[in-house]
Length: 425
Ligand code: GLA
Image 1 (cartoon, rainbow, N blue to C red):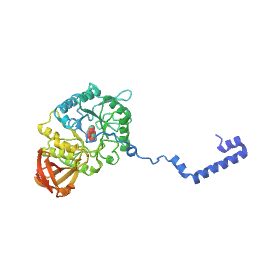
Image 2: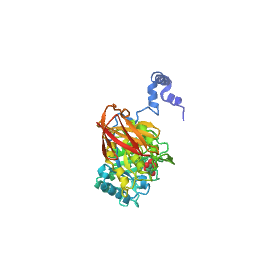
Image 3: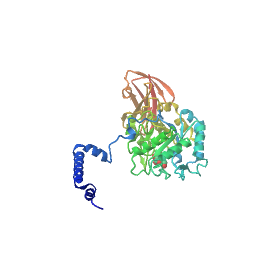
Image 4: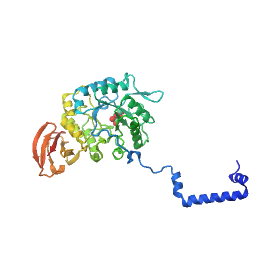
Protein backbone atom coordinates (compact mmCIF):
# COMPACT_ATOMS: atom_id res chain seq x y z
CA UNK A 1 0.00 0.00 0.00
CA UNK A 2 1.32 3.54 -0.83
CA UNK A 3 2.45 5.58 2.17
CA UNK A 4 -0.13 8.13 3.33
CA UNK A 5 2.01 11.18 2.37
CA UNK A 6 2.24 9.94 -1.23
CA UNK A 7 -1.45 9.29 -1.47
CA UNK A 8 -2.22 12.73 -0.06
CA UNK A 9 0.30 14.40 -2.44
CA UNK A 10 -1.24 12.65 -5.41
CA UNK A 11 -4.73 13.67 -4.38
CA UNK A 12 -4.21 17.28 -3.30
CA UNK A 13 -0.83 18.42 -4.76
CA UNK A 14 2.05 20.27 -3.04
CA UNK A 15 0.18 23.38 -1.80
CA UNK A 16 -2.60 21.26 -0.48
CA UNK A 17 -0.13 19.01 1.32
CA UNK A 18 1.33 21.96 3.18
CA UNK A 19 -2.13 23.01 4.27
CA UNK A 20 -2.91 19.43 5.37
CA UNK A 21 0.27 19.16 7.44
CA UNK A 22 -0.38 22.50 9.10
CA UNK A 23 -3.87 21.41 10.02
CA UNK A 24 -2.50 18.13 11.43
CA UNK A 25 0.07 19.96 13.55
CA UNK A 26 -2.55 22.43 14.81
CA UNK A 27 -4.91 19.60 15.83
CA UNK A 28 -2.14 17.75 17.67
CA UNK A 29 -1.08 20.87 19.55
CA UNK A 30 -4.63 21.78 20.45
CA UNK A 31 -5.47 18.33 21.79
CA UNK A 32 -2.23 18.00 23.71
CA UNK A 33 -1.95 21.47 25.15
CA UNK A 34 -5.46 22.77 25.52
CA UNK A 35 -7.79 19.77 25.98
CA UNK A 36 -5.97 16.93 27.70
CA UNK A 37 -9.00 16.25 29.91
CA UNK A 38 -11.31 15.76 26.95
CA UNK A 39 -8.87 13.45 25.24
CA UNK A 40 -8.47 11.45 28.42
CA UNK A 41 -12.21 11.22 29.12
CA UNK A 42 -12.87 9.78 25.71
CA UNK A 43 -10.06 7.28 25.93
CA UNK A 44 -10.26 6.14 29.60
CA UNK A 45 -11.31 2.45 29.51
CA UNK A 46 -12.22 2.48 33.23
CA UNK A 47 -14.08 5.71 33.90
CA UNK A 48 -15.03 6.31 37.54
CA UNK A 49 -18.81 5.87 37.80
CA UNK A 50 -21.16 5.44 40.78
CA UNK A 51 -21.96 1.94 42.04
CA UNK A 52 -25.45 0.85 40.90
CA UNK A 53 -25.96 -0.91 44.24
CA UNK A 54 -25.44 2.34 46.13
CA UNK A 55 -26.94 4.76 43.61
CA UNK A 56 -28.84 7.43 45.60
CA UNK A 57 -31.67 7.08 43.04
CA UNK A 58 -32.02 3.37 43.79
CA UNK A 59 -35.04 2.27 45.86
CA UNK A 60 -35.30 -0.82 48.01
CA UNK A 61 -38.05 -3.25 46.94
CA UNK A 62 -40.19 -2.45 50.00
CA UNK A 63 -40.38 -6.08 51.22
CA UNK A 64 -39.35 -7.57 54.59
CA UNK A 65 -40.14 -4.56 56.78
CA UNK A 66 -39.73 -7.01 59.67
CA UNK A 67 -37.36 -10.01 59.49
CA UNK A 68 -38.76 -12.69 57.18
CA UNK A 69 -40.17 -15.84 58.80
CA UNK A 70 -40.57 -19.24 57.20
CA UNK A 71 -38.95 -22.59 56.57
CA UNK A 72 -36.13 -23.80 54.30
CA UNK A 73 -35.33 -27.38 53.33
CA UNK A 74 -31.52 -27.30 53.54
CA UNK A 75 -30.63 -27.77 57.21
CA UNK A 76 -32.67 -30.96 57.53
CA UNK A 77 -33.13 -32.40 54.03
CA UNK A 78 -30.05 -31.07 52.18
CA UNK A 79 -30.26 -32.43 48.60
CA UNK A 80 -33.05 -34.88 49.45
CA UNK A 81 -35.88 -32.58 48.43
CA UNK A 82 -38.98 -33.56 46.50
CA UNK A 83 -42.58 -32.57 46.03
CA UNK A 84 -43.82 -34.64 48.96
CA UNK A 85 -41.40 -33.18 51.48
CA UNK A 86 -42.36 -29.63 50.48
CA UNK A 87 -46.11 -30.32 50.47
CA UNK A 88 -45.98 -32.12 53.82
CA UNK A 89 -44.08 -29.17 55.25
CA UNK A 90 -46.59 -26.67 53.89
CA UNK A 91 -49.45 -28.77 55.33
CA UNK A 92 -47.73 -28.81 58.73
CA UNK A 93 -46.97 -25.08 58.79
CA UNK A 94 -50.55 -24.25 57.85
CA UNK A 95 -52.03 -26.46 60.56
CA UNK A 96 -49.58 -26.68 63.51
CA UNK A 97 -49.72 -23.03 64.58
CA UNK A 98 -46.60 -21.90 62.71
CA UNK A 99 -48.53 -19.97 60.09
CA UNK A 100 -50.56 -18.21 62.79
CA UNK A 101 -47.33 -17.37 64.62
CA UNK A 102 -45.98 -15.65 61.50
CA UNK A 103 -44.05 -18.32 59.57
CA UNK A 104 -44.87 -17.52 55.98
CA UNK A 105 -42.29 -18.53 53.37
CA UNK A 106 -41.80 -22.18 52.36
CA UNK A 107 -38.45 -22.25 50.58
CA UNK A 108 -36.90 -25.12 48.57
CA UNK A 109 -33.13 -24.86 48.80
CA UNK A 110 -30.62 -26.54 46.47
CA UNK A 111 -31.21 -29.58 44.24
CA UNK A 112 -34.70 -28.97 42.85
CA UNK A 113 -33.29 -28.24 39.40
CA UNK A 114 -33.38 -30.22 36.19
CA UNK A 115 -31.60 -28.96 33.08
CA UNK A 116 -32.21 -25.86 30.98
CA UNK A 117 -34.60 -26.38 28.06
CA UNK A 118 -33.72 -25.67 24.40
CA UNK A 119 -34.45 -21.95 24.93
CA UNK A 120 -32.34 -21.76 28.07
CA UNK A 121 -35.20 -21.75 30.60
CA UNK A 122 -34.57 -23.66 33.81
CA UNK A 123 -36.77 -26.68 34.51
CA UNK A 124 -37.39 -28.73 37.65
CA UNK A 125 -36.00 -32.23 38.25
CA UNK A 126 -38.88 -34.32 36.82
CA UNK A 127 -38.30 -37.32 39.06
CA UNK A 128 -38.44 -35.25 42.24
CA UNK A 129 -41.08 -32.72 41.14
CA UNK A 130 -43.28 -34.62 38.67
CA UNK A 131 -46.01 -31.96 38.77
CA UNK A 132 -43.57 -29.10 38.25
CA UNK A 133 -42.83 -26.01 40.30
CA UNK A 134 -45.89 -23.99 39.29
CA UNK A 135 -48.25 -26.62 40.71
CA UNK A 136 -46.24 -26.72 43.93
CA UNK A 137 -46.32 -22.92 44.23
CA UNK A 138 -50.09 -22.96 43.65
CA UNK A 139 -50.49 -25.59 46.39
CA UNK A 140 -48.50 -23.49 48.86
CA UNK A 141 -50.35 -20.30 47.94
CA UNK A 142 -53.68 -22.06 48.42
CA UNK A 143 -52.63 -22.66 52.04
CA UNK A 144 -52.16 -18.92 52.53
CA UNK A 145 -48.37 -19.29 52.53
CA UNK A 146 -45.64 -17.93 50.25
CA UNK A 147 -43.20 -19.85 48.10
CA UNK A 148 -39.45 -19.54 47.80
CA UNK A 149 -36.75 -21.09 45.64
CA UNK A 150 -32.95 -21.21 45.42
CA UNK A 151 -30.34 -20.40 42.79
CA UNK A 152 -26.73 -19.31 42.55
CA UNK A 153 -24.78 -16.41 41.01
CA UNK A 154 -22.26 -18.81 39.47
CA UNK A 155 -22.38 -21.34 36.66
CA UNK A 156 -23.40 -24.04 39.14
CA UNK A 157 -25.13 -24.18 42.52
CA UNK A 158 -23.25 -25.52 45.53
CA UNK A 159 -24.99 -28.85 44.86
CA UNK A 160 -23.77 -28.86 41.24
CA UNK A 161 -27.10 -27.92 39.61
CA UNK A 162 -27.36 -25.20 36.91
CA UNK A 163 -26.65 -21.73 38.32
CA UNK A 164 -28.07 -18.45 37.06
CA UNK A 165 -24.92 -16.82 35.69
CA UNK A 166 -25.72 -15.51 32.21
CA UNK A 167 -29.42 -16.40 32.66
CA UNK A 168 -30.40 -13.88 35.34
CA UNK A 169 -33.29 -12.16 33.55
CA UNK A 170 -34.53 -15.43 32.08
CA UNK A 171 -34.53 -17.12 35.50
CA UNK A 172 -36.26 -14.17 37.17
CA UNK A 173 -38.94 -14.35 34.47
CA UNK A 174 -39.37 -18.09 34.96
CA UNK A 175 -39.67 -17.67 38.74
CA UNK A 176 -42.31 -14.96 38.26
CA UNK A 177 -44.28 -17.27 35.94
CA UNK A 178 -44.15 -20.01 38.55
CA UNK A 179 -45.28 -17.67 41.34
CA UNK A 180 -42.06 -17.47 43.33
CA UNK A 181 -42.14 -14.96 46.24
CA UNK A 182 -38.63 -15.43 47.65
CA UNK A 183 -35.23 -16.18 46.08
CA UNK A 184 -32.21 -17.37 48.03
CA UNK A 185 -29.18 -16.68 45.84
CA UNK A 186 -25.96 -18.54 46.62
CA UNK A 187 -22.31 -17.88 45.76
CA UNK A 188 -20.71 -21.16 44.62
CA UNK A 189 -18.80 -21.44 41.30
CA UNK A 190 -18.54 -17.67 40.92
CA UNK A 191 -14.78 -17.59 40.24
CA UNK A 192 -13.59 -14.00 40.10
CA UNK A 193 -17.09 -12.57 39.77
CA UNK A 194 -17.72 -9.33 41.65
CA UNK A 195 -20.40 -9.83 44.32
CA UNK A 196 -21.83 -6.33 44.15
CA UNK A 197 -22.27 -6.62 40.37
CA UNK A 198 -23.69 -10.14 40.53
CA UNK A 199 -26.26 -9.48 43.27
CA UNK A 200 -27.31 -6.11 41.84
CA UNK A 201 -27.89 -7.76 38.46
CA UNK A 202 -30.20 -10.41 39.93
CA UNK A 203 -31.91 -7.83 42.13
CA UNK A 204 -32.68 -5.79 39.00
CA UNK A 205 -33.79 -8.90 37.10
CA UNK A 206 -36.25 -9.80 39.87
CA UNK A 207 -37.70 -6.31 39.84
CA UNK A 208 -37.98 -6.34 36.05
CA UNK A 209 -40.03 -9.55 36.32
CA UNK A 210 -42.87 -7.48 37.74
CA UNK A 211 -43.47 -9.81 40.71
CA UNK A 212 -42.48 -8.77 44.26
CA UNK A 213 -39.74 -11.26 45.18
CA UNK A 214 -37.94 -11.11 48.51
CA UNK A 215 -34.21 -11.37 47.78
CA UNK A 216 -32.05 -13.41 50.17
CA UNK A 217 -28.33 -13.01 49.44
CA UNK A 218 -26.21 -16.00 50.43
CA UNK A 219 -22.67 -14.74 49.87
CA UNK A 220 -21.40 -15.74 53.34
CA UNK A 221 -20.23 -12.20 54.15
CA UNK A 222 -17.05 -12.41 52.05
CA UNK A 223 -17.62 -9.09 50.25
CA UNK A 224 -19.14 -7.37 53.32
CA UNK A 225 -22.62 -6.94 51.79
CA UNK A 226 -23.78 -4.98 54.85
CA UNK A 227 -21.70 -2.08 53.43
CA UNK A 228 -23.44 -1.93 50.03
CA UNK A 229 -26.50 -4.18 49.78
CA UNK A 230 -29.22 -2.33 51.73
CA UNK A 231 -31.07 -1.51 48.50
CA UNK A 232 -30.09 -4.71 46.68
CA UNK A 233 -31.19 -7.54 48.97
CA UNK A 234 -33.59 -7.98 51.89
CA UNK A 235 -31.15 -10.13 53.84
CA UNK A 236 -27.55 -11.14 53.44
CA UNK A 237 -25.68 -13.98 55.07
CA UNK A 238 -22.98 -12.67 57.37
CA UNK A 239 -21.17 -15.99 57.91
CA UNK A 240 -20.42 -19.45 56.56
CA UNK A 241 -22.95 -22.27 57.04
CA UNK A 242 -24.46 -23.03 60.40
CA UNK A 243 -24.37 -26.55 61.86
CA UNK A 244 -26.32 -27.93 64.80
CA UNK A 245 -23.38 -27.66 67.22
CA UNK A 246 -23.01 -25.34 70.19
CA UNK A 247 -19.69 -23.73 69.20
CA UNK A 248 -16.56 -23.87 67.05
CA UNK A 249 -15.69 -24.56 63.43
CA UNK A 250 -16.52 -27.92 61.90
CA UNK A 251 -15.08 -28.08 58.40
CA UNK A 252 -16.83 -25.29 56.50
CA UNK A 253 -19.56 -25.04 59.10
CA UNK A 254 -19.86 -23.01 62.27
CA UNK A 255 -21.46 -23.68 65.62
CA UNK A 256 -24.12 -21.39 67.05
CA UNK A 257 -22.04 -19.29 69.45
CA UNK A 258 -19.34 -18.79 66.81
CA UNK A 259 -21.94 -17.42 64.40
CA UNK A 260 -23.38 -15.18 67.12
CA UNK A 261 -19.97 -13.57 67.64
CA UNK A 262 -19.57 -12.85 63.90
CA UNK A 263 -23.06 -11.43 63.51
CA UNK A 264 -23.30 -9.32 66.68
CA UNK A 265 -21.01 -6.38 65.76
CA UNK A 266 -22.87 -5.87 62.47
CA UNK A 267 -25.98 -4.67 64.32
CA UNK A 268 -25.83 -1.06 63.05
CA UNK A 269 -26.29 -2.25 59.43
CA UNK A 270 -29.66 -3.98 59.94
CA UNK A 271 -33.04 -2.31 59.64
CA UNK A 272 -36.49 -2.62 58.04
CA UNK A 273 -36.10 -4.16 54.58
CA UNK A 274 -32.44 -5.16 55.00
CA UNK A 275 -31.31 -7.66 57.61
CA UNK A 276 -28.13 -9.41 58.69
CA UNK A 277 -28.65 -13.16 58.22
CA UNK A 278 -26.70 -15.41 60.62
CA UNK A 279 -28.14 -18.42 58.70
CA UNK A 280 -31.22 -20.56 59.18
CA UNK A 281 -32.39 -22.09 62.43
CA UNK A 282 -31.15 -25.44 63.72
CA UNK A 283 -33.81 -25.66 66.46
CA UNK A 284 -34.89 -29.31 66.46
CA UNK A 285 -31.88 -30.53 64.46
CA UNK A 286 -28.91 -32.36 65.95
CA UNK A 287 -28.65 -33.15 69.64
CA UNK A 288 -28.35 -29.81 71.38
CA UNK A 289 -29.87 -29.45 74.84
CA UNK A 290 -33.19 -27.65 75.33
CA UNK A 291 -31.22 -24.78 76.90
CA UNK A 292 -29.02 -24.52 73.82
CA UNK A 293 -31.98 -24.47 71.44
CA UNK A 294 -33.60 -21.80 73.63
CA UNK A 295 -30.42 -19.69 73.51
CA UNK A 296 -30.24 -20.10 69.71
CA UNK A 297 -33.85 -19.01 69.17
CA UNK A 298 -33.70 -16.17 71.71
CA UNK A 299 -30.49 -14.72 70.27
CA UNK A 300 -31.71 -14.97 66.64
CA UNK A 301 -34.91 -13.20 67.68
CA UNK A 302 -33.12 -10.45 69.57
CA UNK A 303 -30.64 -9.97 66.68
CA UNK A 304 -33.61 -9.33 64.34
CA UNK A 305 -32.42 -12.29 62.28
CA UNK A 306 -34.70 -13.95 59.73
CA UNK A 307 -36.53 -16.77 61.52
CA UNK A 308 -36.29 -19.51 58.93
CA UNK A 309 -36.94 -22.87 60.58
CA UNK A 310 -34.69 -25.64 59.29
CA UNK A 311 -36.08 -28.77 60.95
CA UNK A 312 -38.69 -31.33 59.96
CA UNK A 313 -41.73 -29.37 61.12
CA UNK A 314 -44.09 -32.19 60.16
CA UNK A 315 -42.66 -34.51 62.82
CA UNK A 316 -41.15 -32.16 65.42
CA UNK A 317 -41.35 -32.78 69.17
CA UNK A 318 -43.51 -30.72 71.51
CA UNK A 319 -40.33 -29.26 72.99
CA UNK A 320 -39.14 -27.99 69.57
CA UNK A 321 -42.61 -26.66 68.83
CA UNK A 322 -42.71 -24.73 72.10
CA UNK A 323 -39.47 -22.98 71.16
CA UNK A 324 -40.32 -22.18 67.53
CA UNK A 325 -43.82 -21.04 68.44
CA UNK A 326 -42.93 -18.86 71.41
CA UNK A 327 -44.96 -15.81 70.50
CA UNK A 328 -43.44 -13.59 73.19
CA UNK A 329 -40.00 -14.18 71.70
CA UNK A 330 -41.25 -13.88 68.10
CA UNK A 331 -42.81 -10.50 68.96
CA UNK A 332 -39.36 -9.24 69.92
CA UNK A 333 -38.00 -10.38 66.55
CA UNK A 334 -40.89 -8.78 64.67
CA UNK A 335 -40.85 -5.48 66.58
CA UNK A 336 -41.66 -2.61 64.21
CA UNK A 337 -38.60 -0.50 65.07
CA UNK A 338 -36.45 -3.16 63.38
CA UNK A 339 -33.37 -2.59 65.52
CA UNK A 340 -30.88 -5.47 65.75
CA UNK A 341 -30.23 -6.05 69.44
CA UNK A 342 -26.68 -6.51 70.63
CA UNK A 343 -24.40 -7.29 73.57
CA UNK A 344 -24.20 -4.52 76.17
CA UNK A 345 -22.20 -6.26 78.89
CA UNK A 346 -19.84 -9.22 79.12
CA UNK A 347 -17.78 -10.80 81.87
CA UNK A 348 -16.25 -14.16 81.00
CA UNK A 349 -19.08 -16.48 79.97
CA UNK A 350 -21.81 -14.16 81.24
CA UNK A 351 -23.47 -11.62 78.96
CA UNK A 352 -26.33 -9.11 78.84
CA UNK A 353 -27.95 -8.30 75.48
CA UNK A 354 -30.48 -5.56 74.73
CA UNK A 355 -32.84 -4.66 71.88
CA UNK A 356 -34.68 -1.33 71.91
CA UNK A 357 -38.36 -1.76 71.04
CA UNK A 358 -40.69 0.54 69.13
CA UNK A 359 -42.62 1.50 72.28
CA UNK A 360 -39.49 2.60 74.15
CA UNK A 361 -39.18 -0.72 76.00
CA UNK A 362 -36.30 -3.16 75.83
CA UNK A 363 -35.99 -6.87 75.19
CA UNK A 364 -33.17 -8.20 77.35
CA UNK A 365 -31.32 -11.50 77.35
CA UNK A 366 -29.20 -12.72 80.23
CA UNK A 367 -26.97 -15.31 78.54
CA UNK A 368 -24.83 -17.87 80.31
CA UNK A 369 -22.33 -19.38 77.86
CA UNK A 370 -20.70 -21.32 80.69
CA UNK A 371 -21.28 -24.87 81.88
CA UNK A 372 -22.41 -23.97 85.44
CA UNK A 373 -25.52 -22.02 86.51
CA UNK A 374 -24.69 -18.38 87.30
CA UNK A 375 -26.38 -15.19 88.43
CA UNK A 376 -26.48 -12.38 85.84
CA UNK A 377 -27.65 -8.81 86.44
CA UNK A 378 -28.97 -6.40 83.82
CA UNK A 379 -28.42 -2.91 85.21
CA UNK A 380 -30.62 -0.13 83.78
CA UNK A 381 -27.43 1.78 82.97
CA UNK A 382 -26.45 -0.96 80.48
CA UNK A 383 -29.81 -0.52 78.77
CA UNK A 384 -29.69 3.26 78.48
CA UNK A 385 -32.22 3.90 81.27
CA UNK A 386 -31.84 6.00 84.41
CA UNK A 387 -31.49 3.74 87.46
CA UNK A 388 -34.41 5.44 89.20
CA UNK A 389 -36.85 4.28 86.52
CA UNK A 390 -39.42 1.66 87.52
CA UNK A 391 -40.12 -0.83 84.74
CA UNK A 392 -42.54 -3.73 84.30
CA UNK A 393 -40.71 -6.94 83.57
CA UNK A 394 -42.10 -9.97 81.69
CA UNK A 395 -40.39 -13.36 81.45
CA UNK A 396 -40.68 -14.46 77.80
CA UNK A 397 -40.00 -18.17 78.37
CA UNK A 398 -42.19 -18.52 81.48
CA UNK A 399 -44.84 -16.24 79.86
CA UNK A 400 -45.23 -14.50 83.19
CA UNK A 401 -45.36 -10.90 84.44
CA UNK A 402 -42.59 -10.35 86.99
CA UNK A 403 -43.88 -7.07 88.40
CA UNK A 404 -42.15 -3.70 88.72
CA UNK A 405 -38.37 -3.55 88.94
CA UNK A 406 -36.14 -0.57 89.72
CA UNK A 407 -32.47 -0.14 88.80
CA UNK A 408 -31.68 -3.67 87.72
CA UNK A 409 -32.97 -7.16 87.09
CA UNK A 410 -31.03 -10.24 88.23
CA UNK A 411 -31.65 -13.95 87.67
CA UNK A 412 -29.87 -17.26 87.93
CA UNK A 413 -29.31 -18.63 84.44
CA UNK A 414 -28.63 -22.31 83.71
CA UNK A 415 -25.68 -23.68 81.73
CA UNK A 416 -25.82 -22.59 78.06
CA UNK A 417 -29.23 -21.09 78.78
CA UNK A 418 -30.93 -17.72 78.56
CA UNK A 419 -33.36 -15.73 80.62
CA UNK A 420 -35.25 -13.43 78.27
CA UNK A 421 -37.43 -10.55 79.46
CA UNK A 422 -39.04 -7.39 78.21
CA UNK A 423 -38.93 -4.17 80.23
CA UNK A 424 -41.60 -1.55 79.69
CA UNK A 425 -42.74 1.50 81.57
C1 GLA B 1 -24.39 -23.18 50.58
C2 GLA B 1 -25.33 -22.31 51.42
C3 GLA B 1 -26.26 -23.21 52.21
C4 GLA B 1 -27.05 -24.09 51.25
C5 GLA B 1 -26.10 -24.90 50.38
C6 GLA B 1 -26.84 -25.64 49.27
O1 GLA B 1 -23.53 -23.92 51.39
O2 GLA B 1 -24.60 -21.48 52.28
O3 GLA B 1 -27.15 -22.43 53.01
O4 GLA B 1 -27.89 -23.30 50.47
O5 GLA B 1 -25.13 -24.06 49.76
O6 GLA B 1 -25.97 -26.39 48.47
